Length: 212
Image (cartoon, rainbow, N blue to C red; front, side, top):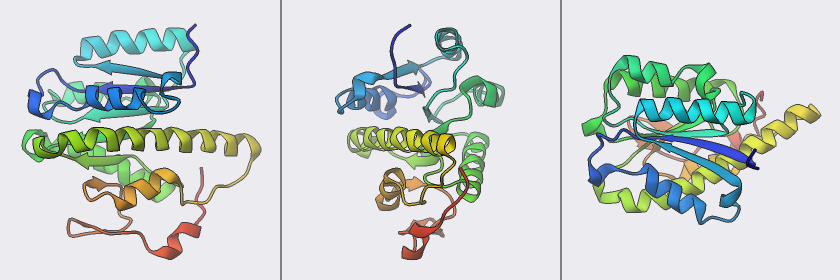
C-alpha cells in the first residue's frame, strides 16, 4: 500500500468551463507545498471516475475516511448525483472546502453546503467546512490560497486526532480558522458574518473551547 499521511478528495465536473476550472490548479499548488508529497490528491471530474477512485481508496486503506474534500459546486449535475457524493459513509464526512461561482451553481447544493458549514461551526471547535466564492477574474489568486488553506485543515485534523487520543481539548483559534478570518471570499458559518459582509471574529472568541 502506498504510504500517505493524508488523503484529499477533489471533485469538479467536467462541465465546468475552462475559465472556472480550479481544482487541478489547487492540486498543483498543494503538491509544491512542503510535505505535499505525503498527501494523496485524488482529483475526479465525473461521478463514474469518483466512484472508481473512492472504491480504490477504500480498498487500499481498509475503508478509511478522507482527511479533507474540495468540491466545486459549479455545474455539478442533478440533485441525486450531488446527494450520492455527499453520503457520509462515502467520503467519511470530512471537512469540505466547497467552491462556488454564483452564476453556475444550483441553489440546492449551496443550501446543503451552507447547512454543513453552519452545523460544524455551531457544534465543533476550530475551522468548520467552508464555502469559497470565486470568479474567472480571481481564479489564479484563489488556487495557491486554497492550497494553503487545505494544508491548514490537514494540520488541524491531525491535532484533532491527537486530542481525541489523549482526551485533551484544543483552543478554537487554529491556523485554518485564522486563514478563514482574513479571507474576503469565504463563508465559514455564522461567526462574524452579517448581511453578506465578512468581518473578523471578536477577539474574545479565540479562547473558546468546543467539543472535538
